[in-house]
Image (cartoon, rainbow, N blue to C red):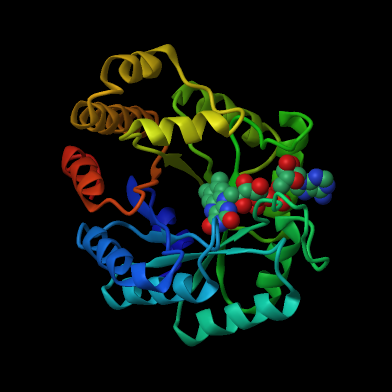
Length: 285
Ligand code: FAD
């Protein structure tokens, strides 16, 4: 099923993200975790592409296993380190497996700066996917601005280019203060961007994750969130419980404010996904 049709129903939706393994020996355990999350019957599940290693084949294979389990998959695809030929071969593979949803991304510029020359921005990939078949296309957006953008206005201008190139919905980078999203929604709607916006929520369950988030410049950590880390950071079980509760509260506030699409960065953790789903049992189908 196409994600734009799921979103068009206008009801709150809960979806989860998983990332494929970097190496073949981890494939089975990652697939197992993905299928455990699939048992929660989310609206859809996304499978990341290539970030930090792995191969495109793992993304397609895990997306395919989710499809076989009856969950709509969203396969991510990046372009900046790729060629037209590679992108076309992945799209053909997705078509062959009846995977209809693609999240089209530029991808991060590698540290050595070495990229292929075929693509510069995600908008070019979106236009190509649009021409290549009947896909439902998503893109990334950044309520706090993308790290490379000169300012938020420029970033929103480039988001509009992605929508005009043919994307059907956008999913946000994680954020920990809902007011940042509400303000962003106001700004993008004002610029005529009307596609559904799915809020990306990261349940922070350990200190290592927080360090990674802090190293990604730009993610604002509210005082209420920092207090949780200060108090529970050295108690892994308490940190996990508090991190899940914080994310759940964020989700309830979003849905209460009519942000219906919620995507949880579940980090291949079925127990975290299950706890969030259970806490929303009367709120989301
Ligand atoms: P773009 O939309 O191309 O934007 C990149 C930068 O260029 C922005 O600063 C933008 O403002 C600017 N820009 C865009 N167009 C122009 C233009 N015409 N002229 C000048 N500047 C321009 N990474 C992975 O490797 N694998 C994944 O699976 C993955 N999944 C993700 C999922 C989500 C929901 C999000 C939010 C991010 C994900 N990422 C993933 C990370 C993403 O690849 C990086 O954030 C990357 O740096 C930007 O990708 P993009 O598609 O947003 O790029």
